[in-house]
Figure 1 (spheres, rainbow, N blue to C red):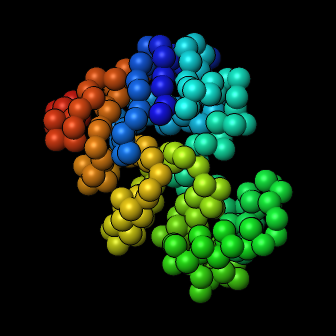
Figure 2 (tube, rainbow, N blue to C red; figure 1 turned 180 degrees about the vertical axis):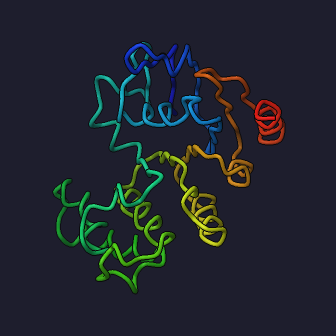
Amino acid sequence: MIELRNVRHRYGEREVLRGIDLTLAERRVAIVGSNGSGKSTLARLLNGLIVPSEGQVLVDGLDTRKDAKAVRRRVGFVFQDPDVQIVYPTVEEDVAFGLKNLRLPRDEITRRVDAALERFGLTGHRTWPAHLLSGGQKQLLAIASVLVLEPAHVVFDEPTTLLDLRNRRAIARVIRDLPETAIVVSHDLDLVAEAERVIVLDEGRVVADDAPGPAIAAYVARMG
């Protein structure tokens, strides 16, 4: 469970989140809002990439301000642009990178890498240069490199924005089938509609928090 308690966040003098109180316990939560609404900042607060200017973010009881390292092990983060996330030259090296940082035994690393590549259809590309993958394959690689670390929760920041329709649908299937808790920040209303709960942000505040139907309707009305 992830909790935000009276969270405010500022960049300099600009306040981008204002008094956010949320408890995120559902298996699939989506966050939607216009550009500048604060949703990407909110996403980054959830795994301690940034800490709030005021208030508290708790992940399974761990405070992101005090327990940042432990929080990042529990909350994986998938960025909008996979090129930001892919750090090693080949597919299998990139998937193994985080595991090596955990200093796991070699056979455990091999087992987890093999399972992740199989899970995301990348086994046949394990020795490929990562930059030669398609956009959809790069996003799958980014997801595999996060999930191989076995987080309890995964945050996706605009995971389909840079993809064509075919690859958007493929990533949507991956998210739909995850056993882990997923929190998805997106403008893609088809993806948002698959969540159990949808939170709408506007000017740094929660303006709707409901099932997908009414929440999306409230978002569309605001954008109209």
